[in-house]
Amino acid sequence: MILLSPLNSSPLGLMAIVGVPTAVAILAFEPPQTGTAVLALLLLAGAAAGFGEATPLWYIERGWAVLLAGGFAISTTLAPGRPILDRSLMGVAIAGGTVGAMGAWRPDLPAALDRHVSGQFDRVLAMYDSRAFGSPVVDAAVRQFVGVWEAVYPAMLVLASVSALALCVYLLGRIRGEEAALPPLRHFRFSTHLVWVLILGLALLVLPAGDWADRAGGNMVTVMGGLYLLRGAAVLVWLGAAVISSGWVIAVWAIAALALYPVTIGTALVVGVSDTWLDLRSRLGVETREK
Image (cartoon, rainbow, N blue to C red; front, top):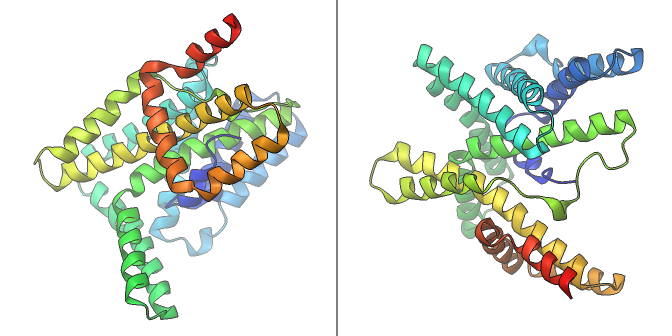
């Protein structure tokens, strides 16, 4: 399955951003059946858990989940034949645009949302401080990591939301009895035009436009970095499947890639960005067929 690992870094609860879109998709796109209707209601009930002691963050999580579900329903209705990633990105864009419109109507809303979500990271540091590991090096590393995570949590929410919608499509496929509900990783790709998001993000980071530009640019680069990392991994997996025929060699290659993960991640990122212009799988595929 593709696009699911970013769920672990979501700043919001997973039950809502997975359960609500899946339930809405079941009710909107599946034939009315008792079993699927019950499943949708159970997912909605799970997402509604904790209502009796709801905090502002609880409402933020469910509000984003509802907007995400609506955005994905709209994108699927308008472009049912488009790839999963395209529809997911469109759904996230619709949800994000709605939040932006609400922020324009209520100027205090973005700061309030940021404050409540950022409180999550303060609690993470408070939990860490309570354990008192006592190593200055570890303390500094943890605080730096949490600080970066807090700065780019909108990007991590975007990636987690795309992953949640991919999981939603997978669950719908299993309900329909499809054996391959999601395409294999080696087929993962997206529009080359998205490279302009990366270029704009890098420009905002470089230009001395203020803190807002640094944060916006950092989040744009993080989103595209995650997508290009997956695209590069897809190319490497495709190349391995095309060149290597022995299962043992593939296993050794996978273990080596995990052991040398800094090199693997860097290579995948470079390959993913390069694939925007080179389209390596098409070129190498043509050469393989000619041979």
